[in-house]
Amino acid sequence: MEVVLEMTLPRNAESAPLVRHTLDASLRGLGVASEIRADIALALGEACANVIQHAANGLEYEVRARMDGTRCVVEVIDGGAADELGTGERRERGAGWEAPRGAPLAEHGRGLQLIRAFTEELHIADRVHHGGAIVHFEKSLAR
Image (cartoon, rainbow, N blue to C red; front, side, top):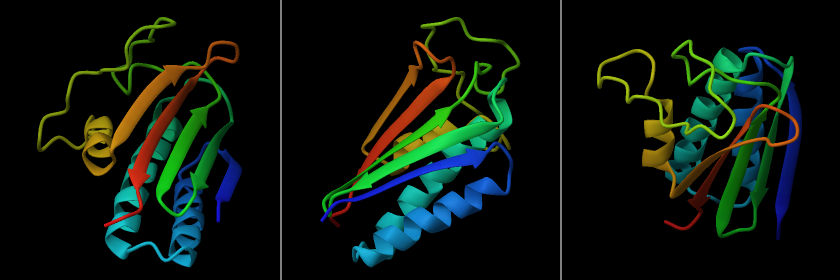
């Protein structure tokens, strides 16, 4: 069985819990272990927080998730140009997304590190024809 979710959400703090809850309910319905669901929820929350805090344009963002029983693939897509993950500097098209790593006890700047730590794959790409970016991550659903 394959489950596909596509959501268009307002770029505000109230949207992140909604999308996390919706994805978690789908994973729970597929029988995914709570530890794996927690990893995915954490990664999704970090990706959504990045869009909500740092996308310079766009009132909405999209979340697409596909679960096939063995793997969960998530894309968080912002609708406008973003600064370099909160550094206050605009990135140039095609520039790398590798912002300086946040200090271990810093309140901000560790989102990508967390996504990378709790998922198997992380790719970030500019949206060539639309502006903005796509954060793509994957997680195995097997223990």
